[in-house]
Image (tube, rainbow, N blue to C red; front, side, top):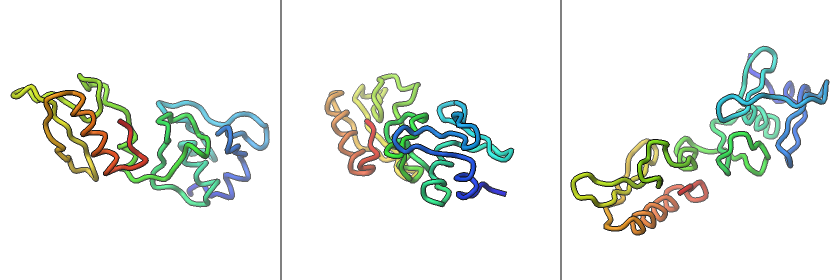
Length: 154
């Protein structure tokens, strides 16, 4: 049986300003860090803490939660927002294997020009090829803002 908002509120106290969740019975901080997110176990089942917070605040399980600042441990209410998978992905930083260190920009091996692309709803969009890195960065930023709005992270 899935955790309900009432059960979560019965066991936990959430401070919107600090993002901290406490066990109501003991006053101790709830959750532990697991990978890039905080986790919590309630009634023998594990949950991501930000999802439980969303449940407590809205009464509904979220489809996806995005941490606006990219920090998966910052659970302040102002930092949490509902998102689609595409929007959540748009707010990711650059990939670790990105040789240039700039999100959405790569070097074309044949022409040595800078290739700009992004993914929207699981479809790759080719923005174009550019002679300079500055042009490529500007093109990525413009395309990202067009497709992702406030979820853009360049």
